[in-house]
Amino acid sequence: MKPELRELFDTQLELVLPELPQQVRTFMDDVPLVVEDYPSREIMRRMRVRHPSHLCGLYTGIPLIKRSVDHWGTPSDVIHIYRLGILSQARGRNGRFDEAELRNEIRRTILHEYGHHVGLSERDLRELGYG
Image 1: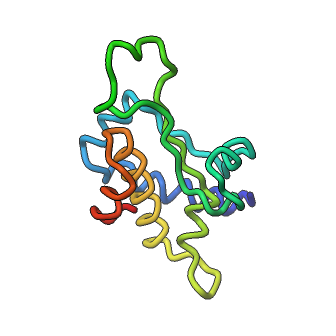
Image 2: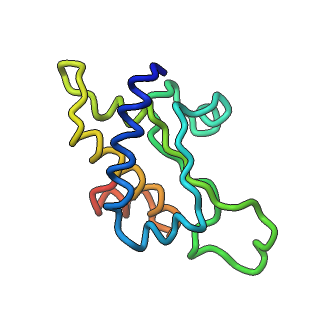
């Protein structure tokens, strides 16, 4: 990824983070947000994604509503967001990025993935406007 695109993304991400709902920022204390340029080949294969620009984010873990004492010792939950996928969603027809739209896509992706953390399904998230 070109450094200027990474910088554009990261600058907009820094503007989004403090505006997230307090509950989501609280979740971030326990479930880290990892920002990567694009998903690995293994993730793409596992998620059945053909092109790295087609995946914006990924929640890995056990949703809060499904946890029990039987899950003690399992790896920690993690949320990944992918710059390439989010940038692809925010690119206008003219090929340029609207910074407000980029912030919207970043926010939507983060809320989507933390929604999975609390147990929301894809359908639930679509109904809430985060699908």
